[in-house]
Image 1 (cartoon, one colour):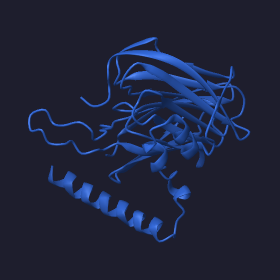
Image 2 (cartoon, chains in turn purple, cyan):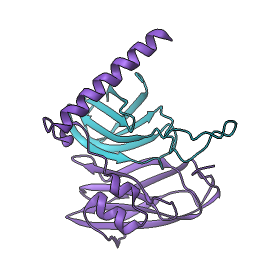
Image 3 (cartoon, one colour):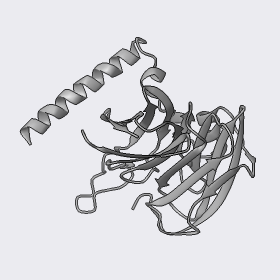
Image 4 (cartoon, helix red, strand yellow):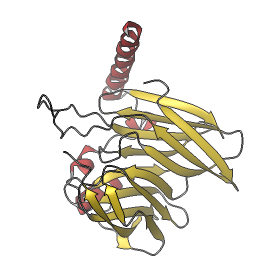
Length: 154
Length: 102
């Protein structure tokens, strides 16, 4: 236990050193990680979230995007979702309309295919939106998931 | 949090499907401890990066709306023997990374 604590302290020291370097402009955040777009993740509406995360405020429905999710999720804390787009894509994101803060995750793709599978939390029954960015435009597809027990808060 | 990531990758054609499982509480911070009534401190992964042979193929962000012990699967161009590296960082500054061969 003691040695774990040492390791943890060292780890957090190293992490803060990186933080200082980023703050001082020595490293661009891109080089380390994609900076967390706080405004996008705190946004309460789908449009604001998309604007913040992907630079475009609205997405057009498209048959080129598919969202795979269960019709009914008994446990809203773990909902498996797969978003897939056709062709090359620049970015991919998952949003949940009914969540207080709709944006779940967004990824910039630099080589990876337009495919993302993950597990998300849903507060209540609502649409899961898969968004794929290609050629500067956003395409989306929706899938309604009924949630029996909410997975946010509690 | 060393060893918090498990990576499995399988090749299909010129793409590899990479599946990774990260052990992390993904605590959103809006829950209260049921016995003490105290707020549970938020702790969730904010940033994830995946590299194939040192080249970033996927970089992005998560919110607390990703389930506990996040599962992430993506497809990237890779062949057998390529090195895949996945790293994460959470809102408390903690981080980990793991490398695996396809």
